[in-house]
Length: 74
Image 1 (cartoon, helix red, strand yellow):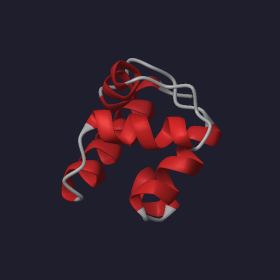
Image 2: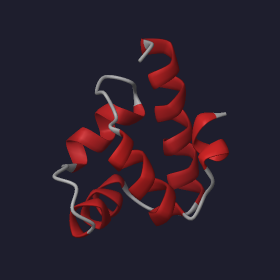
Image 3: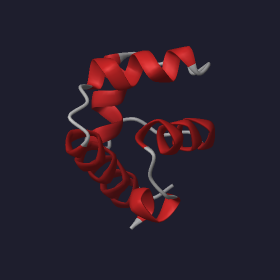
Image 4: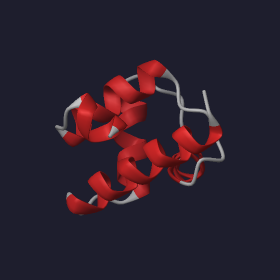
């Protein structure tokens, strides 16, 4: 995936997470409970575009934050 595109997706995830007043730690914990092996540090790296985000992670983040794919990708 394009680095700039991943950075934009990460920014969208951060904005959506913050709108729900959820910490990176809380998001990571919910991802772990859903079967994703991810740390708070990895969430932080995704949000700034330093770590690749996998399709299963996107799907679960969408469900946790109760948003659409459009919200994440646009």
